[in-house]
Length: 294
Image 1 (cartoon, rainbow, N blue to C red):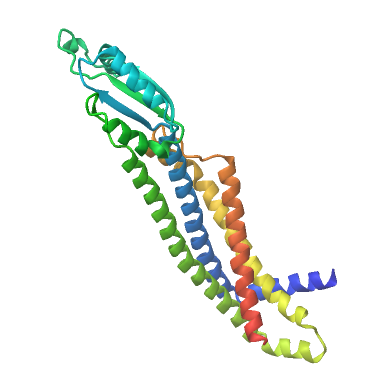
Image 2 (image 1 turned 45 degrees about the vertical axis):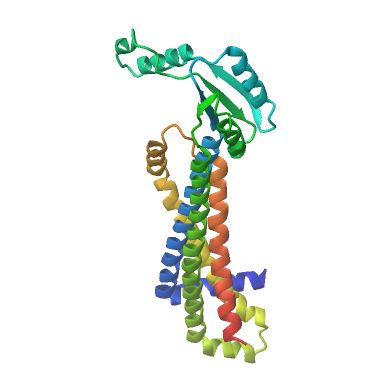
């Protein structure tokens, strides 16, 4: 306990003596941790939205007009037999028009213009998939049925673009955070090194009277840890204050798409921010002490 009290007391004194550099290190740490938290929130929201979009992916095959019901039933049975397919629903031309009119009425539009006209909408098959990312095989199979199917929209390319965007966003974020983390690490190293140089005579006296390396090193390592803790605490406080407007803005942008902003994400961000702050502060101080006292 004496060693712990000594280390904490010396580290707090060192933080005050070298407060200008320590404040600079803490501010830089906060900026880096804010970027880290923003990246985690952004990627979590994109992935949640992607999962939601994937869960609603279905293959719709528009059919030619005038097909016999037995040919449609045969096609439906062949599609349902595919391993990728969960089930298939057939919608007739009349049902398609009724659904279209009901949707317009729900939006408050005047649907009287649609009465008395020839039905331009096609009948179609709606294919629900077991795995949304396997839609391409079903799409290719339906497009091959040129005598029955007139059009199958391509949805897989949109899903692939979203997946690629998420991956690129993650890679770019890692690169940016890597540079920011390196900057924080260098500032912490420089801050602790200046503290070591300012107390070089005191360190030499401690060594002459027989102080072990841990009595010399640990106060400085704790300085880095305290810088990391201060940066993490202030970052979490800023995120707490900013969370309501951020959540409202994200909800306005995403609409009905869920973004996964729940308690698990909050705990994840807290763990990442605290871990990154402690890691950068402690590692930076350890490198500085180890290099100086070698």
